Image 1 (spheres, one colour):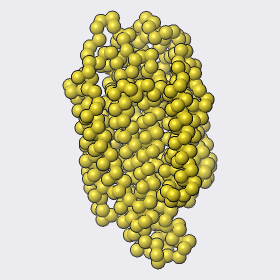
Image 2 (image 1 turned 180 degrees about the vertical axis):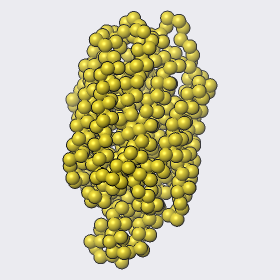
Image 3 (image 1 turned 90 degrees about the vertical axis):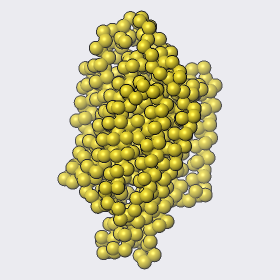
Image 4 (image 1 turned 45 degrees about the vertical axis):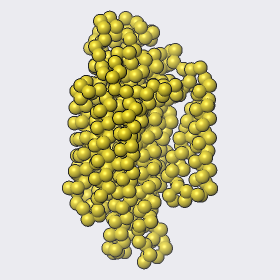
Length: 529
């Protein structure tokens, strides 16, 4: 397959222009991989830093969730309008703009000194990431045919996955020698490298015929998703019957309902829900979203377990998260040949089943267990992640006609990214509620008890200060109980998703396009099975 001419620098013509030389698309992919590496790196470096930030900034469990979720909520909420801005004004131009905004947020994170401004810095970074992610994927169906697209999606996924183990390792080393703000500062050279790669290697592309960014729909998306995550995070602390929690969750339902009604009534919607009528797109979205939900939740829960309960330092925590990342990278690379033989349905279903097995095994963890048990189920979880998410995303993109690639990839990434935010909110809230219920603070004075209930890190700080071994043991047991409950929910959800995917997901088999037919929509180059 060759690249349409509108993917050459300075060209912004229609989707059926004559093809450009084939090597051009691989240079473009290199620039996209550089951009995705930045996002993958930043995701995990902060999660490893959260226990340190909790100790140095006094951030409680809810504030830690918002430090992680502010990035993801803004990321998910702005992804659709950001993708459309790239379609209309140039994807390379907006991609570089996104990296520049991400750079500004990283610099802001290095100079603030309390949880609130850190949350704000993370939100700014989410704005930048929202411009980067959809634009990186929206060009793939036009740049690559069905056979090559799996390799392209795998390369981008591998870049994100490569950033995941690098984040904890480098972040851990920084935290062992510098202050917590160094985990933001280290983003600067990576972002600058990404900007240079995009400027010199990525051709300019655009689609002036794409729908305009709709301000009311954007506002409904941001406020609706933000209210939902806020309600889920605050529920365990305030109580699910608290008027504020109920009011926020109710407002979220109204706002998101208004968004659906508004978009359904538009001839050219920003949020094209008609794409969900395609069973392949719908169920691949479900699978990719669930995997992202579980992965994001685990990346929030696991560092606190390794640092607070097993007592590893930040760098050692990063090293001990490598089994999951190794499994993810290996499986992501090996999923392509399997999909070529069997189609995506058995591979995605198998990945979800492996993920369920890993989560259920992890849910049996006891406070007295060592790292060996954790390494085992982490390795299995990584394999499940890799075999589920790459085929699901590739198959979802493969169902899209080329003229709807931008809106379709934006919808896929919005749902998937919001799944990540919801994973942190739901699993983090479940963990926080179980931890508070199980923690024994009956022998402590009220101020110390209140401090210990904020997080397992805070409980250990109190225990070390007053020499209370009983409190430390209770905090460990309470945290492991909450982690096991969260993993049990993950396992049950993965089993349910595997059953639904096996029953309802179509199983397209890639076929070679007829010579001269490279401009056909990718969805028409698959034969359903």
